[in-house]
Image (cartoon, rainbow, N blue to C red; front, side, top):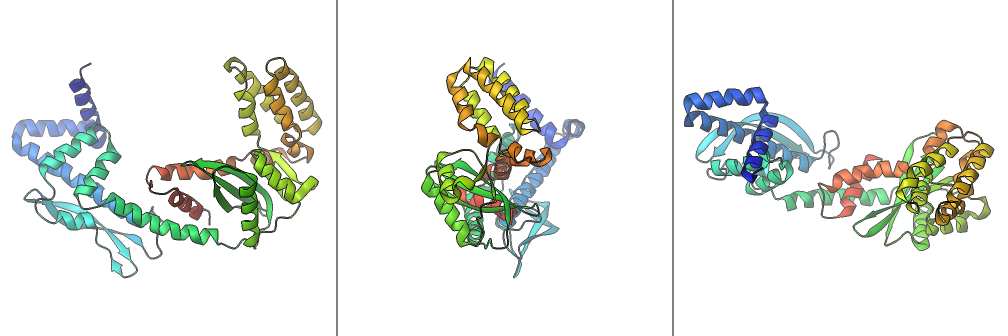
Length: 384
């Protein structure tokens, strides 16, 4: 199919998504009847929709999501009728408003567009090409620069606020938290390793306890994280239930702290992946099934027997996979040995609570690119 044909189909699909097919057909008949006048009216309406989207985007970036303001006293404040120039013609728009502690905060995009000549019909046509090709984010960010909204300035504003929140988070007292279980896992971003601790207190709620940055999850980084949590008042007593991915640095730090009395559960998801990484693809599905069935057993002896059978099966296929299982055999069964009920066992069997928390970071990464700490700050503040 020729390139121009593909582009035409994408353009039509984008416009149908924006207006609806029936509405677009009505507009087509209006343009046929009135010629250029109908087309000019359509372009003017598209321009109004576009600049309203740009102003909404600026307000959202400056104030934060709904009900989660980036600063105290900063919030969205309704809409009002306004007007701006498209070329040398005035058009009516709905003007979003933003309020701060000292009153209304003017939007840079709205102030710029009140000047004749900033927003041309040629620019509308160019932007519509991007929208029709479904490059929504790239198109809006490019248009924001034309309208006087600097993406860099927006990002700097977000960084300033989130860095302060992150500083507050890192100094937050933990003396009121009595942890029942603590999850520790490493999240890799931008070439750095962030060792994260998430706790569940004796009443059930989750708490982000802290994180420490390093190149790898070595023993020293783990000790720094433990010392930081203790400095802020967290009591790391022997009866805490620890769930980790099995990193050697983490395990060494925990054993140095608690010795033989350490209560440790190995993350079963990480171990499942480690075992499968040694196997040819044709064996992975069956290996996952056998491992899962063994862990679904309620009794310790039954689970231990089925894992032993699984190890024997692995020996006949791949010695390294079998060794990987045996390396963590008892730590995988800690929950079974302690007779933890099945429903609670689902929560404590892996480090997924940390992965779930960082799914928010991954969403933020698409919008905040200057510094990873900004993303971390946004996410951690949701848990405070």
